[in-house]
Image (cartoon, rainbow, N blue to C red; front, top):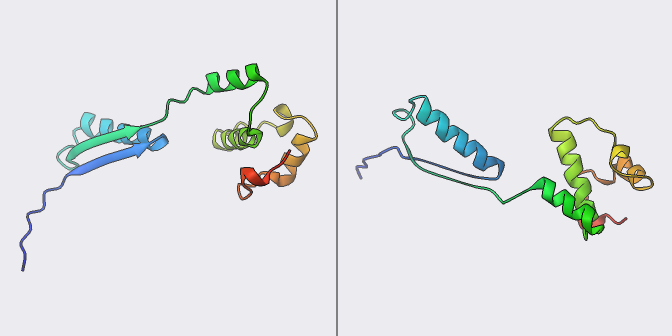
Length: 116
């Protein structure tokens, strides 16, 4: 029989929204004095350098975006996630708003399957 000396070492990692959660957990554990129960050995978090305002400004300034269906996915995700409850017509004009509202973007259909 092999005897093992188990030393609990928690390693936290996350990326994007998971990176934020990783740092929030590390902060909570250290600030509230939970290190005895949760001995964190290492923390690693990351995220891309996203600037949504600069992204939107660039698209408007260029007047062209090579994959416009991605903008619909982005808007639908934000609308659902943050409960904006904005009608599709507030962002997209007909006939595009009609096709989107009809279920073209059902999170099953891929970008390459969507053609405007």
